[in-house]
Image (tube, rainbow, N blue to C red; front, top):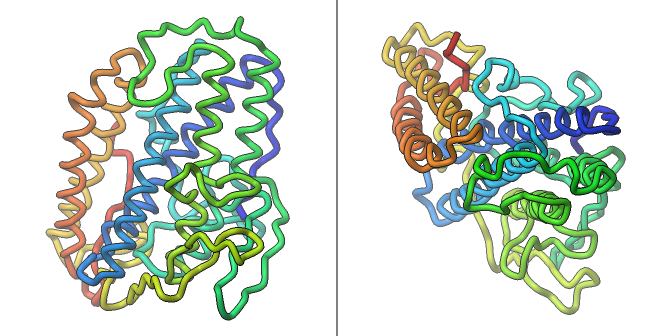
Length: 339
């Protein structure tokens, strides 16, 4: 489970700081998730389904970042996105996380069942994950022991409620449409509820809505290799169904990208080095476009950022075709290439 550093959110200044941390945290999950997504070839039925699940999670992580930006803008803050320190070190702890031997270290790795279990499920794990059994055999539940992202957002929501509507002094024109427009306590809490339930579900249900499971449980589907189904005979109302398998071969279905591209030598393939630099430049351009969009020019998201996302996608896909001397393939570094 992801540990969260103790955070004292006791006034407007610390609330704004916490929301900036939340923006950085939401963004920080995207490079690992995107890398897993792009290394999945999707040529098999299981690979295609795994790509669909990952894609749905990535889209919602982008929404969560947007919601956090909208809340910060609504209370008179200004998101900082286009800065080198906005991007965490990979491998390393995520923002707000405690790294090292006692915490979660996140790298940029190709898709694998181990990465899903040991990294992605750890990031998204709720305080009390619901134990969903397989119809046969039955699995043992794992007891949680640390604070979660959901608890971090609960602390933010508590301080927003304490501060009352008087803190909502931000320019409404800085709100980015397409998600909850934040203008008062109620709308801010609604945005927070969306972030938490989409990531963790609720204490009594693995779903974030009537049709979709929370991120933790979607990752658990990938780890278990089967879909969650409604099951009235189960104590939780749900079970994993072996008849609805999601089979991904970690070798045949996955581009064998070298782990943590920031740490590898690409000199054996000049084109790989060139494309890695191009990916960093495009990624930086994307962060710049998002920074402008979330700082008073919301139309930049659709006019500029979306097209840069497709440019980034094309560059990553070509980079992943570049084989290195050790037989593995190059991958994106997610480095900030600006000043």
